[in-house]
Every structure is written in structure tokens, then in C-alpha cells.
Amino acid sequence: MSAPTVPTRRAAHDLGPVTTVAEGFTLPSALAFGDDGAVYVADTRLRPERSGRVWRLGEAGERTLLSGAFVPPITGLAFRGGSLWVSQGGPPGRISRLDPDGSVTHVLTDLPGGDHHVGEVTFGPDGKLYFGLGALTNTGIIGLDTLANGWQARQPAVLDVPGYDIVLRNVRVRTSDPHSDDPTTERLTGPFSPFGEVVQADTHILGARLWGWPLATAAVHRADPDGSGVELVCWGLRNPFGLRFLPDGRLIAIDQGADDRGSRPIGGVPDFLWEVRDAAWYGWPDYFGGRPVTDPAYRPSDGSIPTFVLANHDELPRPERPLTAFPGGVSATALDVDPASAGRVVTVALETGPRSAGCAIVLVRTTDGAQHVLHTSAFADPVALRYHPADGALWIVDSGVSAASSADGRRRGRVLRVDDRPSAPPA
Figure 1 (cartoon, rainbow, N blue to C red):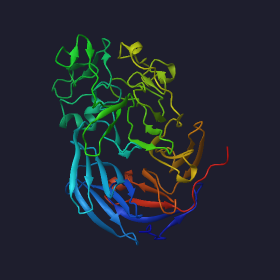
Figure 2: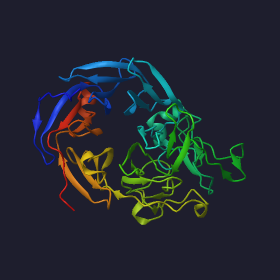
Figure 3: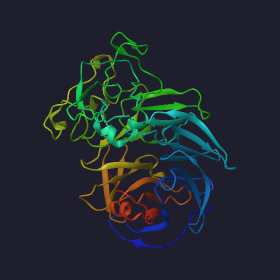
Figure 4: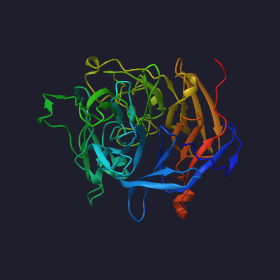
């Protein structure tokens, strides 16, 4: 099946002409192509009921519902062996297989989710499925920011789980108790603990040491396609939601850096592109981009100096350094490997934020991390990015989320195609 070709609206920008292929989605979030060129789009319906749906697009952009049996938000789609693999943030977090007959099999379920969720699936040269699990918190301590996001009220006992054995420093944070009628009431919370609690001796602890677990947050995992044999690949990536394999077998990931918020704010942390290695540590919650949180560049807006929460850095692998970091004030939201580059270029979508209209598509050389930036105002909220296997065209999902869409309730989500292949100047 060839790609839908609906020349509706075009606009020329630095990125080049962009065509709207399909529109009117509620909250589209993921895109995948079948071996025959079929186009699949994930969408979340918020009202009257919350549901995650997967659609197939036809030649003229019309859509056919394949299944609405998913827990929103849908965070990724991958096509493999005639089936779709659907990542769902939940709760509960899940990875499910959607077969051609419409049947759904939950391959992995009860995956943790909080500030961040289970990421999209990619399949490795070993035939295993790889997926990321983001940190439940910003930087390891549950605070009022986490409560405001809503997940902690639904899952009060859920907390971040380390991938390697760790020893905690005596870090305690006092936070106003939102559950009390007395505004002066405070709760004391420690890292890797539920809100209002500190780590106490239980079956998970050997003395002052927390065990590393094979299913950890802030980590990348792999498993057999049926969900068995789950194992940890690496730990310390705050939100490794985008994963791709290069032709030479290397695994890469985009990762969103810490925010200046909550009980342990950290300022000035950019988003990163990493090469993912077995048994490596990527630094969360004490290092970002290979630099410690005590670095003056990471001082938050309240002027405080972040402190370490882990006491055994010397027992952990040396923190990795990123392939590249993206400019401050933007969010890396999606990536794919340019098929014409033999793995030498990956393409990353960046949201540039409310102060700058539109977004940017960045071509990154995997040899040295050099970036070639293409700006556009044709869309503002890119959440998925894929190259079509038939003609190599770059497709993008724009979620359409904005203040205007929230106010008027209109469905603004779109699937777009970049008509001219983005290319970087020769090195």
C-alpha cells in the first residue's frame, strides 16, 4: 500500500513545504508504517470517555478504527511481524500487541508511570523488544509538582525504583501537606520514597542499601516479544521515551533533562541524545549530561544549590556523556533514523516553547553530534516522527495541543508530510 497523498495545505518554511495528510484527531501521539506502506496513527479521546485508539489511514487520508481498547495516553507505536506494538502510559502502564484481526494481547502490564511513562518500543538485531521507563519524579523526590500532575493521587504507593544497588544520603525535604486543612502542616519526604515518608528498613533494603531491580524507573529494558525475560539494559536516563537502532547495531535514545520544579529543582538542564550501552549509568538523579547537579550551571531559579541523594557514586559506573545536547528552553519530543544516511544522521523534533512560534527539526550526525537545525512554523507540537519506508518521506504527528484548542474544544491534531527530504550540508 502506498502512502496517502492528499495535497490539502502547503506552507514553505526553512524546513520546506509541508502537506497535511489527515486532520481532525483529538490528541494524536504516535505513528507507524506497515511493511506494505500502511499508515497507523494513535489517538487519545478525552471526552466523553478516556480511551486510546489506533487508526489505519487510507489512500485519501480516511481512517479505519482498528481498536479502541488501549489505556491512554498511547506513547508509542511500532510495527513488527505483521502486528502493531502499542505503548500505553496508563495507569496501568502497558505494552500490547495489536494483531491484524483486531485482537489485543497485553505483552507487559502493570508498568510504573508517573511524571513520565513507558516509552515507545523498538526491536533490536537480537529480535528482542526494547523500551524505556521514565522516572516517576523530576529528580527522585515526590513533591507538590508531582501531586499537581495528578498521578500520585491515583497511585499513592508508587515510587521510583533504582536499577542498580544504591545507598541514600540523609536527604529530607519538608513540603506543605496538601491533604491537611492546616496550611502550616508539613510532611517530610525522602528520595525513592512515597510522599510524606522516608526509607525505612524492609525487605527491599540491605542495611542502608536499596537493591537494584530488573524493572526499574529511569531505565531502558529489553524482553522477548512475548513479554518474558525482562532485563535491565541500563539505568539513569530520566525519560528515555524515544529509542532507535542504527544499522550498525547501536541503540540511541532521546532523553528529557530535569526541570526547575518540585522539592528538588534543578535548573538549566537541556535535553540529550544518547548512545545506550549495556550496564551503563547515565547519571540520574545526581548527574545530567555527565555533569553533577552541584555544577553552578544547574542552579535553580530559587538560588538553592542541589545536593546529591546517592552516597555510593564510587560503586556505580562512571556517568556517561551524551552524543549531543539540545539548546536550552526546548524539548526533544521525537526521533527517527534517516534511512538514506546509512545511520550517519538521526532526525529529532524539538518544541521551541511558547516564546518562539513553531518548532525545529534537527539533523544530528551520529559520528560527532553536530546539529543542522531547520525551523518551521507549520506546526508547533510535534510528538512523533517517522520516515516512510517506501519513498523516504518524513512524516510528523502534530498533537495540536494549544491554549486555543483547550479553550474551544476543537480537534486540531494532524498528520503531516514534509515534501522535500531534510538534508544537512556535507561535513
